[in-house]
Each structure stands twice: as structure tokens, then as C-alpha cells.
Length: 634
Image (tube, rainbow, N blue to C red; front, side, top):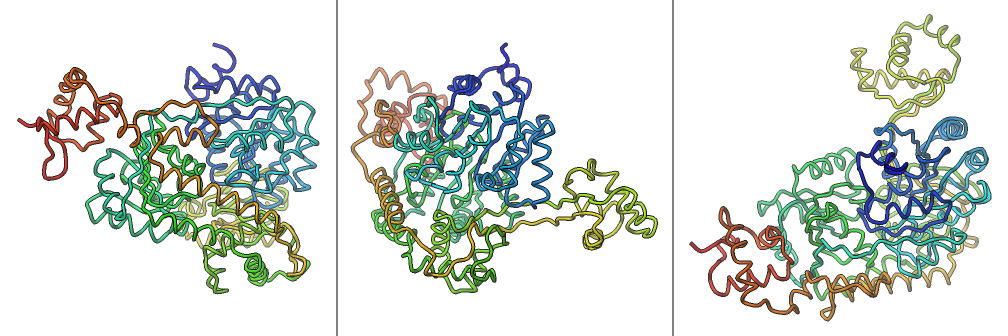
């Protein structure tokens, strides 16, 4: 067992690496800038965590999603690996202490959002870091040719000025066209870089397109025909509720999930689905990033995604356990019209974007020439209601303002309460002697949480209240009072999204939406939407090949399982059918099965299984019962 395998087994319990993981690890360990293309579920995090643990120093991990960042940090801590995260939800003092710990302590991983890289606080401290690797997740965000460009990613290359020459960069993404692959390397200033790519082919994933004007009826057929857990993606919050209710009314275990729900509700719904209590989750694309549920048997899309990249990411959440799974796209001819309407909504005219910007400034009470670097709690629905704006158009206007570098939007994240003692023990003791109630609370905090004089501790007001036989509000008020007395720095729990002004507020004359960039972004969006429409409408090529060619992989063989391949496959011979019949009879010996469950149980090429099942139906050796299930004729 070599060094990398020892680390893998010690911290993750695995005895060997998957696919191209070792190639990537050896590449960055040897100091080579590397771009890794790994589909969803390919085990990307292992490729930077293992080589970082194999060397002295700290690994910087840059990722745009705060929730995903916090989840990975908690996973590493559970494995006994020291990791921290810096993001816009932390106070300046918290960031200062964390950066000190990274410079002078033994932190192995620092996760941070790309926006933090440009701050003076980070740039000064980073010079003192012993960085062994820089890992950039969701690296397609750095390319304006990608589907989710973020201007803050352009600051990443500036890290090279702060770090020792030769510090390797590892860029990771699940989806990138050849154009984006070249641009990522250019933007990150790769020196003799290397590209390591897994095939984009998902051999266990069956791509299906079902044309239907009545999508609800078709979805019911799909859900009843497929076994196991699933995700149904839609484009609006209202649709998540409507379709989940429709499934429930038809006796199917389902729930809805969208960004408009409270954090508690979302966490509960996600937990119920992950545990199997809920079979199907109907969601917007707010659901899925970082969801590690390997046994998702199908992902169905009721609405067309914006691009093949988005579809590939979302469909790829099915079958991460490498067992047979299905990606089903429901399509109707009216989808083409809706797609054009979506393009117009996604790109409001510049005059409307400026109107939204000025409404935002008024909403936040920011005077002209002020506000740069300030953060504000922000509710999109509250903003739109107050200023009578369409929520979709306003959100897209804000996204364009973000791409132009005027603001930064953050997702809603649950930031627990934190506390740090900012006085010395002598002054604290004087206060305890003079105040009996404060004395009890302070002693309890010091017994319950360690290191509270040197770093922020995450505290639970409910737990403290229970132990002192009082209420959460009493604890809250007591902590606020200690904060006012400058004995502690108390940061109450916060869950709201934020908007950060990255530039001072400008008037209409000085706010510029670059017309060339605006036109280019719209054209790119239209090209990607057209490619997605082509995938849905195509009836002359294997679905898997269509996706592979979009990502530049032109040598992929037909999958043999998608709707195109099964319709155009070579008929089975009589001897081949006779060899399959005993397996079908055995599978149906105890209970009738839906089509896909029967196909799955045969462990055959699905194309051959479907042909054999159809032959037995035609010859009436098997039949469908009144529930639409297949049963063996006695």
C-alpha cells in the first residue's frame, strides 16, 4: 500500500481509487497544474483531499456554494481532518481569527468563496500561508463560454502572485465543452497544464425522451413504471407544489422542495427523501447540489433545462451507485415557444436592469457614492413586493448586475449562533462576582464550549436554556447584554440570503451594462437552449451520443439503451429469446412487476430485455393486469 492508498483507507475506508482519481492525484502531487473533468458522482473531492493530506501545508478550496462548502468542512471534521470555511456570512473578526489559524495553526483545508480572494484581509494573510495546493471546484464558472459564468472566479489567477512559484492548481468540473476546457486553462494561467478526463458516458444511465402534451399523465406512467427513489425537476416553485400534490392524490409518496421554503422545512424534506420516508421529491434546480444519495433510480424533467450542461448535471444525480437508473425528459411541442419566452425573461433590456439596480439602492437605503463592500440581508420576494417587480425578471436583472461586477448575491445559508469572549479573564471574573445570573451563564458556557477566548464557538441557545431551566429568549437577552458590555462578541443565528455591494452605488449615467458582453451572453444562452431543444426533438441519433458529442467526445458508441437505440435495434433471434424466457418466468414467479422493474431484474442489456418482454406479450405468454403490471400467465 503506497502513501495515497494509506491516506484513502485511513480517512475514507476505501482500499482503491476509482477511475482517473489516481492520475489526478499523482499529477497535482507532482506539481502539475491539472484540469479534471469528472461527471457528477465521480468522486472529485478525493482528488484534492488525498494529495493535500500527503504534503505539509494547507489546501485552499475555492467553491461558489456556501452550503456545499459547509457540508464538506463538516465531513472532513468528522473524519478527524482540520478544515475551516470563510464566506460572506462570517463577520470580519471571525474571518480574521480563521485566517490567523490558517497562517499559524495546523488547518489542512480552507474552503472559501471566490469573492473572498479579492479582499485586503485575505490577500495579506495568504502571503503567510504554506499552501500546498489550490483546488477550484465548479471550474466552468471561470469561463464566459460556460453556462454559469461568475466574474469573481476571474480573481483566482491573482493567487499566483501571492503564493510560492510552482504551487499547483487543480480545476474540477463535471461539465465542459472543448471551448470551455481551453478557456479554463487560459484564465487560470496554467503552466504546461494537464487535462485528465473521465468519459462523459454514463453506462448505467438510460436516457429517455417521452413526447406528451399531457405531461402529468405521462409522469404518472413513468413513476409507476420505475422502481425506487426519484427526483422530478420543474422550473417554478408553484409547480413543485402542484405536481407533488398530483402524485400524492394518485397514491404516490411525494413531497415538494424549493428555495421559497424555510431552512427547517427544506432540511426536513431533504432528510425524509434521503432516508426513504419520501419516495419522490419534486423540486426546482435549487435541489441537488451536494446531495449524496447514491440510490436515486430516476430523474425526470417536466420542463426543458436551459442547456445540455444543466441537464447533464441534473440527470447525473441518478444512479450514482452505478446501478441501472433512468433520466427521463418529458417534451411537448409548446416547449419550444416557452424556451423563447425564457430567453426574453433571462435577459431583460438594459433599461429594466438599471431600474432594478436603482430600486435595490433605494430598498437598502444606500446613498449615491456609498455602500462599497457592505453586506445586507436580502429577501427577493420582499424586494419585489415592495417595488412591484416581477420576481423572475428582477432576479435575472440582479444576476446580470452580478456578472457586470456591481453586486454579489449569496444563497440562504443557516449560520448558527457564535460567541467569542473578547475580554480577559480578570475583567470577566469581576463581572461574574457582581452579577449572579450572568455568572451562572458564563460558567455554563465555559464548561460546555472549549477555546472560546481564542476562537468563535458555535453555541446552542436552546441547550443553554434547558440546562439553566430558563427560556431561549432569556438566554438571548443575556448574551446581547454581555455583548453590549464588550465582554463577548455574540453573533445570533442568521439564515437570510445576502446582497453585497461590490462597487459604490452609481447613478444611471455611470451605471454601464456593456452592450457587447450583454449581446454575447444572450447569444451563448440561445445557442445552449437551442442545443437542448435539439436533444429533445432529435429522433435520428442515440441520446448518449448526442450529449457526448456536445461535450466534444465524438467516439462514443451507441448506448443500446435509450429510446432511440431500443427503437432501432436489431431484432433478437428465436434462440436468444428462448434463452431469456426462463429469467423472465423466474422474475415474475412471486409478484407482477412494472416494466422497468422487470427489465432491471433481468440484468441484461435493456434493449434485449425489452424485445424479449414484447415478444412474450405478443405471444400472450405474459400479460398486463388491471394495474398495468406484467404477470406470468399460469
